[in-house]
Image 1 (cartoon, rainbow, N blue to C red):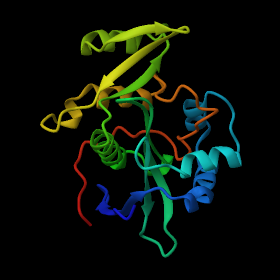
Image 2: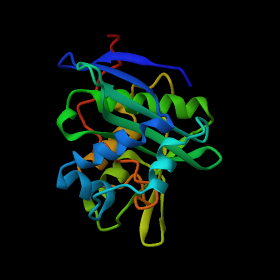
Image 3: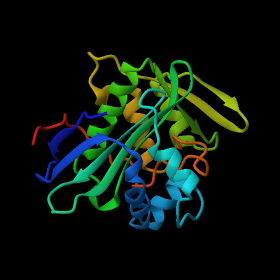
Length: 218
């Protein structure tokens, strides 16, 4: 996969985004160390200090079809540093789990929205029609929001399973249930990845809600 996108964030930070490769494993491991305690708790719901070799292999050895990940780098310094990742992983035909995460210090600059848009577009290109999330039935805030958004849901193993349709190309991302749901995830109200111990794809941080912009060419 040679597709690369160069963009600038709201504060003019130059960022390069490309598909993840196996050699990115050490960068993901380093990214985990820079997460705040809050971000680690929201992403894993447990204390996580390191990623195992098995986890790093899963995160970086993707097939670019049923499992795809975009990784973002700050290229303002001679040594680019990983600052964000967005991915989806198909679990059945047409459906996938998804996560968009940003290193804490880079949140609220628009990177989350750029990665979310790329993940949604790439998933759609590969036949994904919906993302799935798991919500605690005790979470009154999200449950009320799901009622308002008219999103299908069902109870499964003590959690509310939510299928979130991908927005049509003609639908602004910010008006879609997908965008609103991931914003809820960023506030810690919802888990997009239910099996964080098996797939800790949130190694860079959390989705930032400052992403209401299109990718800007650098």
